Image 1: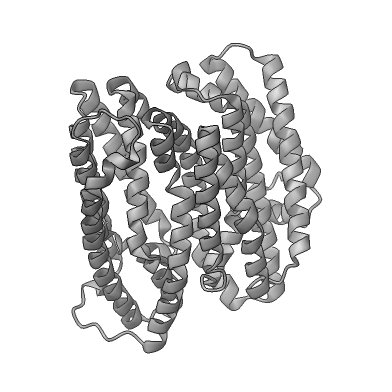
Image 2: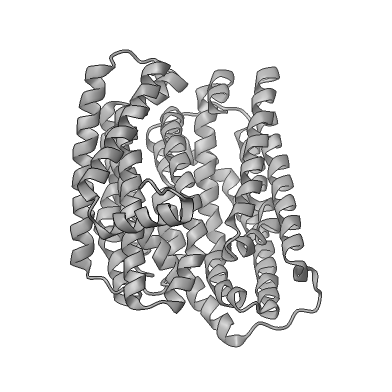
Length: 480
């Protein structure tokens, strides 16, 4: 889709896409973290099959998300007169109307999407994924066809709205079939204790939403303001690939969060600690595989996909990968934090993260260009999330010493660093030309090296033995 987009429309439109995505992510602050707070409250009634409480929670979800949709659309319209302030030197016509249609696409989805959360909380993420993936594939096919026949950004946006509404409606109807009691009109009032828990967690999640917005939803805004839309377009290509890898991994971690919630509620402290170590081991293994692949082949991929004119310097790409690695390595801690409902305990961390990120990113982008916004994200992560998140988790939920966690963390990181450097050196010796065949061989080389080194170095660890036993017993891999 991106390939057809950049071949059919001017590069400024790619920058507009990235800018509007960040703007609307900021407006999603209106959700105030209510979704995760209610999802956490669904774990217990789902486990106990308490349909009355589930119905009451979903009714609250419906009312809240309807109000949020209206609020987002209203607040978004107020931004229209200020759009020009966010963009340095743009001459794109109809940009206000493009933004309004993007806004409607974001707001309308809230009217139906709340029912997805029940599927996720009930460990039925696969159903939600089927609808999401189908919607994304259908949208991509329709947009590709439309751009090839009639390259219009208007048609591109209209198709986006139609598919978004259709996908959310279909997923909501599926949830009604899986949970017929959602159609009941007789809904009891929500228990006051549950209400208080939701209110408390929502207050904490406001801070988390602000922190997340400052880190993940301001890069394109800062680049558009201080560098220009062309830089946003180039940056968004790399972000798209990194986001795809992150989204792929998130499907796995979001699917196990509810199971870990049950583990935390029912199992012993030793069992919880053991499973956390296994999860962290898997995260580090995945981060090594993906990080090495990106370090060796990221610019090769962009050149083959879009062309040399869309490449960033190697230094910028390296820092992008370092930032990605730091973010990826947080997944185990964040998964256990969400399953434990520890939103209140680290409510001040995201606020500090937001302040550090914005100040550092703006200052460094003004003085250093595109690389500054990446440095800002890295600095904010190291000063806040890197140590606060595991500290809060180990103090309140999982019985692990912080020094033991960091000992493993730095060990995994050192192995990843040396493997990545060696892989890039070897790839450079073996493959000189940028071709699809060399790229495919490079992927095979990175996969072989990273997995072989990891397995050889960590084959005697308890976490590796646990994964081996799971593979043998659950997946029939008796040869392991």
